[in-house]
Length: 302
Image (cartoon, rainbow, N blue to C red; front, side):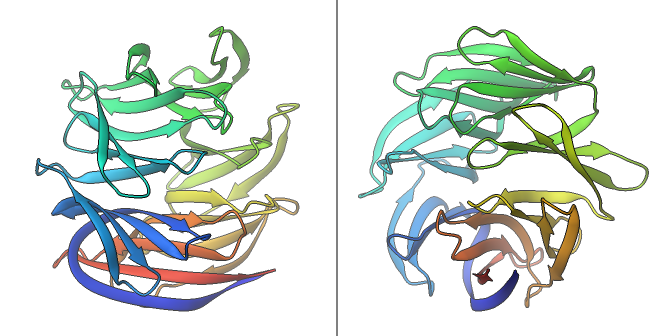
């Protein structure tokens, strides 16, 4: 198993924060901050379509619905999630939340449930549960952070008292994990749940089996994780080193790092995306001084 750099390009568009690789169309979606927009491009950076926000709020997160019909886009320094038609990038709906900043959100594949993480005006964190049909919402927790199971049937809530796993419908607590976690990522099927946990100087990754809630492995790392994505087959996952933008490839079965890959530019990589066919690890970011966007595609060789 290895990654090989296949495509790389840079452009003048600034402050790109998120990427989604659309393997079936050989295209990508980029969330861009200046101007605040959602852009559709081919793999070589040719722009095919664009939706631009009427505000100057940075578009920071993109989520595509499971039926591949809608793109949900949030603005970080605003309080809105925009719903766009994926085929035309035309605006269909806006969901507004009573908080200053939306940090990230997720949507269940088999439900109309959306979990939204926000920063409250007093700089506390707050988690909302929202309906993707009409945008109605309830507060799930204050002073916590949430991570949604891909199906939407359960979610993990990261608190100072540990991690609580809730049933989405009944809000019943299914499990309490006594770990101090800062981030959480479900695998595509929901079989695994990976956490970064606080450790001296750096972080650890703890991988759980969600059927038994047994720990599969503890991964010792010497960096802070900026992003984590599982391959579809789930035997491997990729992490993004937030300090120097290294991509690290890990084996879930052995608990070992297979290799580390350094991107070619001077850009700080912000986001990674892996398509369902495990073809590429696509990543994007922007150079700190100029804001210039860089996109790379790393081919996955199994």
